[in-house]
Image (cartoon, rainbow, N blue to C red; front, side, top):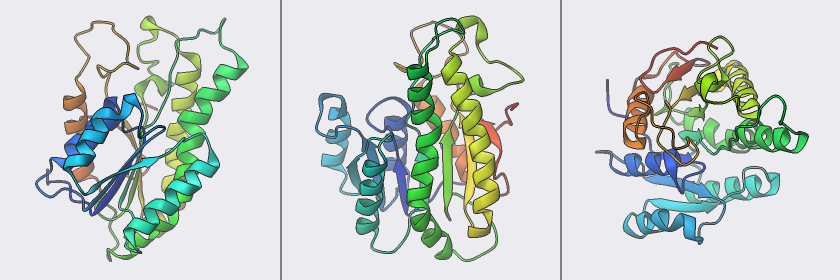
Length: 258
């Protein structure tokens, strides 16, 4: 597989876990992005210290404040990024920000369901809408009929927990709202691939594996992977994508049952 080359990229939920891993790995590429936008709710807060340290060392890394459940915040972030890019467009949008809980069929609530759906499913829709003009510009700046991440792409970080066929890790927890939100995100990705193909934008959902993060919990299991393993695998997959738009792949590039 070739090396991923993008002029610009944006990662949501970038202050920790998989999002921070994406930022670290993108900065470490032989040809890192000229502009790498890392979003989080509180760029100056305690939980963004590692991201702040990276930004102090890498002038191409810009931290952007963003609350993904707030349309006004999304609009402001898109405007800020557009101003920095000065008309060149955004090549890669990685919708990584997400939340989870382990509520069961008996304990799931309206508020919990709405919060998880808003963050995991609605936010990627609204973010993609807001950044669509910049993604279109990037695609137009890379002539040719093929699709690729170096041209323009929306990557939705999903989960095999949203697989209706497999019900991944059911024995570890029901996580009703999380599973339903990720199943819906997979459908959103498919819809985006159908709607945005004509603009030259690739859309893919990725399962990062059961990653050793705070959100992934502390259960010890031999199938778990580190953030480094997961992100390195996903970036390798992204470097090879072309006509895979609308598919649901894991961090090793294999198709996941929907």
